[in-house]
Length: 289
Length: 289
Ligand SMILES: Nc1ncnc2c1ncn2[C@@H]1O[C@H](COP(=O)(O)OP(=O)(O)OP(=O)(O)O)[C@@H](O)[C@H]1O
Ligand SMILES: Nc1ncnc2c1ncn2[C@@H]1O[C@H](COP(=O)(O)OP(=O)(O)OP(=O)(O)O)[C@@H](O)[C@H]1O
Ligand SMILES: [Mg+2]
Ligand SMILES: [Mg+2]
Ligand SMILES: [Zn+2]
Image (tube, rainbow over the protein chains, first blue to last red):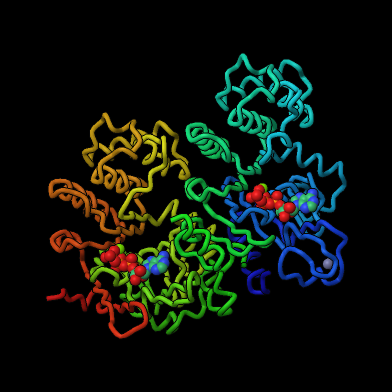
């Protein structure tokens, strides 16, 4: 992915500059048995063993407080990448580090389940593309938030109630509906409950998978406002997956483009959109003009 | 892909090290050999070429800028002129890194980082420079839905550590000076007239008092009274030490603000358009007769 000079530069600028919150290198996820031919794969499907590589050789850094956009065609592996980062799914290859966590160097993808749980519960929040994966539909909205707080080590019932109500207000949900099942909520409300749940433990990192997809325009706008507000006021770093380039342009400082399981381009958002380099990105951007 | 590192390291090798915040040892021509004018330069373009490699229908290589070199002194206002398609906007976008130059260097003397090659500096460095040192006024405002004019302007101060009330106070001060009526302050600029949007756009750039300000036809949609107000502010900002590069169609406006003028021309007989710089620096700055 990156030559020696590139690595040296990345290292030097990290010293001069800031430390990434999250560093990922060579991450891959394979569905299938795998074989030696998988090592120099062209597309997503290995012709020898038939395995599908949902993502392949993904490397990037995410800095504190920034919104990093992730775009790419359907099936290019965006959701899979997020699920791997959230330890929902076991990555097949790769290294992921959080430099501020216990001195940094350990590969968290290979850490114990207990350690992964700790990181997820204390440092991460995720909004799933499908709310059925992110919410327990037969547990009340408040209960969903409480679950995340309990996982993060908040056991005091009064504090949990207060925090849940506070988050409920923050995402502009009507307070009387705190005890209702998310199953009964509209899509936009479910996304907002997911955001409330993701924010419960005040994580420095949010993984957002298509937070606005499928919502009608006015609800979309409110969810986007919420995301902007969270970033501005809480300084939370976000990895934001969206197929809506307008959303990406509005929210992301930097943007990465995935195509057939690989990162084919990354850069400043305005540059990726206005001066795209990779043929796939050019197609993506032009088709939306 | 480099991860925020210099994208040029894929093609070229070590020349981009110079811009990474590492002490510059080998500037072309040798730093000892630089004359006084160059020492005072805050911006110095060396053989900048920008071509677009478009792969959509068939592969075409389109040149917007070719081998362009010039310097801008500290506190100077350099006007850019030339026919439509000569590459004026592309030039500003290369300096702002919305476009990545294909070849060449764009040396900028940063307050924070020292000598930086904007053509290949790490993206995070560019983001910090955009937040604190380099401003850009595009021809059109990119409106963020549902955000009030005052906040569109004020938010630019937040990364610099201002509180919201403080930032809003400064924003209102500036909007007043630009004659945006108070009843519009809390409205979203989406519904503003072209001239009002342009003034919000200017306020967004002016409020951070950037060291280097890039202006793309900033007075194009303003009437002559408004032009007067804008010119007044441009002059004031200039007096405070901001260096500016500005594109104007309007010769009269240009005469009132520019110290020097660079004329870009389309050179015929090339594939695509080709531009070259005619004038550079203080000595030679002829107007087209
Ligand atoms: N559990 C699984 N078993 C087998 N294949 C899977 C599994 N999960 C995902 N895939 C495949 O991995 C590929 C990437 O899927 P993923 O959901 O990450 O795509 P995506 O980029 O998020 O797409 P979209 O934009 O449609 O959400 C797809 O081809 C998908 O069918
Ligand atoms: N993102 C882009 N992709 C492809 N071609 C581009 C892009 N931006 C500019 N060009 C081309 O580069 C050339 C110079 O364009 P540019 O916008 O810089 O001209 P200009 O001097 O600003 O013109 P005008 O006075 O009309 O604004 C044009 O031929 C244009 O089509
Ligand atoms: Mg998905
Ligand atoms: Mg132009
Ligand atoms: Zn295989």
